[in-house]
Length: 137
Image (cartoon, rainbow, N blue to C red; front, side, top):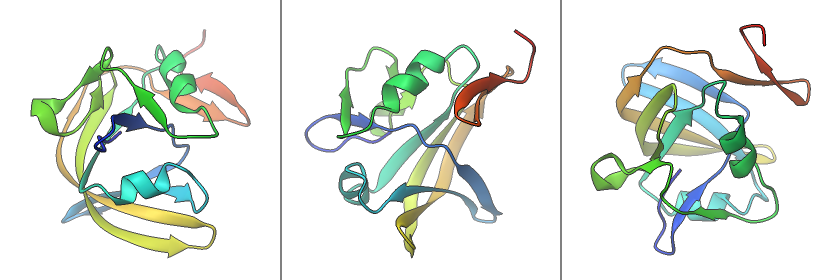
């Protein structure tokens, strides 16, 4: 999630990885034709929220395709006013854009993790086109 001048934007990403411990770097990618790409590339900071198994609704809300989604701040913690993070997420990472690399039909965004928090719980997973959980439901 990030905050351009015209409001709060967020997107569900399906692939996220740790890259380095020193400095602490993570990555994700967005398609070249994603309408989220340009607003993100104009930012210096972004937040990553790793959702719990009870947050499928939020994942679906942020996964809407077609145009960047603007959100009210009902489920958002602005982390001292800078980086938006989802309340109740299993992990939240406050990141600074470190580098952007072209990767075929995607842009790979590398972020330097400046702070993070986590809590215990089961993560929300997406596998073979549907949501899944580690524990039995």
